Image: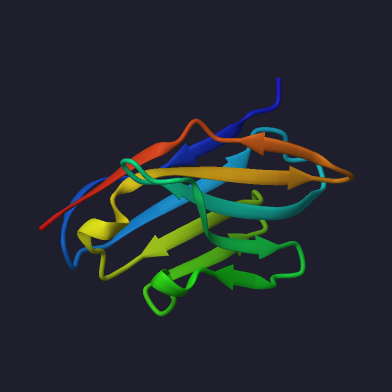
Length: 116
C-alpha cells in the first residue's frame, strides 16, 4: 500500500530551526507536486510551502525568507527547512503528495512546537 513517509518535527525554542522530510513509499510513481500544510490549535489548515516537479515553489507570506522547500531526486524526497521559528509556527505539519494523473496522498502529520 502506498503511503507517505514523514520525519522531522519536535520541540524547539523560538529562533531555532527544524527540518521536515517527506517521501512516497513507492518511488516508481510520477509525482506532480509536493506540499506542506499545517494546522495550528484552533486554526484552519493552511498551505505553507509547495514545490512542483519542475521545481516551481510557493511560500505563504508568513514564512517567506524563513522556510525553504527543496527536492532530492534520489529518492524523490522533499525537505522543508524551517528557520527563525516563532510560537506562531506551532502546528501539526502534514505533507501532501499529488501523483499523476490525479491522486493525493497525505502524510500522518508531525507536530512542531515552538516555545517562547
